[in-house]
Image (cartoon, rainbow, N blue to C red; front, side):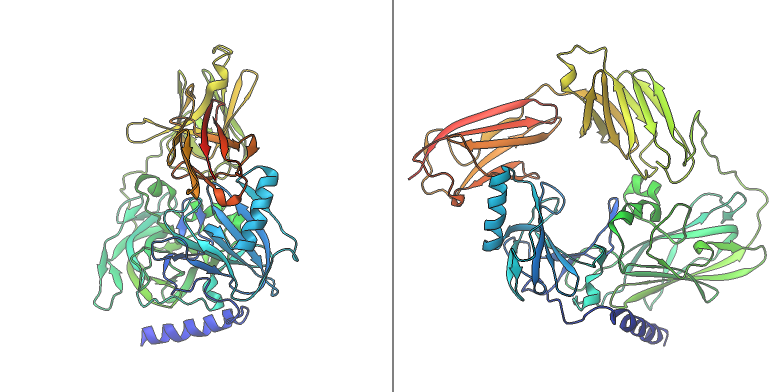
Length: 563
């Protein structure tokens, strides 16, 4: 009866919500059934997922159809991010987005390549006029791929409103088969104030989940006092995929009264970074599990909350009993219920919650600068959500800024004094993030030099080092040799590598004429398509110049022949 009633309530709410969205306007952008590897609002690193990731049967090259008629309003090609991405604006005011594409349809491809050759750049962003690339209903606009930051072949699909806010595409009738209930991985209780405690502990406490025969859960009765909150690790799985995806809705109830709700209907890109305020970032930094806090801390501007009472916190009184329930749902209203009996009990003898204090204290809404040795770190006001103590230490060219377990709202600035280095060595210096269990991996942080100062900006606490890169990138041909005939070849492929600061830019010419070479940043491969018809001579002198992030440059030259 409870399940039936919840289904009725959900269907009513959904029908009300969907009256604002056309149900038969947008089609499946592929001609295969929709199977998801990622859901709308799914928790990703530093952002919410803004669309649906649709599987393409583990291959590239599936036909991608316009979800509805309209015009191409934006085209963006980058080495990372969405890779090759297409934006179509529709007469009803919505815009559909298609990301990680392999290539565009012929008319769009011709338009894009003309612009790329004009700008002599593979990476490009274009905003065609409405009359330039009109798109009809059911028109093929692209082919699915794995470009950009994609982890495997799929189509990233979005629907955005007039304000460029992404909306859950499933509101528009995009259907996915799903009869599975969400999965509950972990649940935690959080004492919030001084004097609050759960099961005689003033620290975050993991609770033991007890599965019930009907698929729901209970938790062993807990004893608590004061202001507390809860956090949940939950995922969802659709019928035709093994992926652990995000859930749609989380509701909490105290003694039968709703006191908190998270719902992933829509959000703005500007707020997406605040995902790190939703999750228990400290736990995520240690074990990569994303625990969603079912309460709202200060400086949390997220718009995904509804029906919030007392910011989701519970005020537990001594000698009083409570029943706290958490309902987790996916978009198809498959739900799971967690029941937590709570008995209020004041404990007078508790181990105190030790907070490590250091000489380095940052008031969240005030700027702060720390300097030691040859390193200075500047934290602008509102770098962090809360007032924090951090560790700060400089040893030689190694800088330690706490641990990467506190989320940053904005970039802080690292500056090294490099006056002790020879002028010939200074251009090769850069700031690098040190990572890995043995602290042996260096990640280039974009660094700028002005006189004897080297500056970098980052949002991640941790270990940094002043590194030097004096090695040139390497360029190796993959499918040809110097002096080879390539008449029957469609593509020219070259492998790039740079072991330290990384590739910054490249330029390729044939007989002095610039040629487009697409860069697969994941594989570090440059590819030229001879069908571009810019290589027309029999004898051809190829020249590729590749530069890394500190300016080391390598040149590759070869001759090939074509008829």
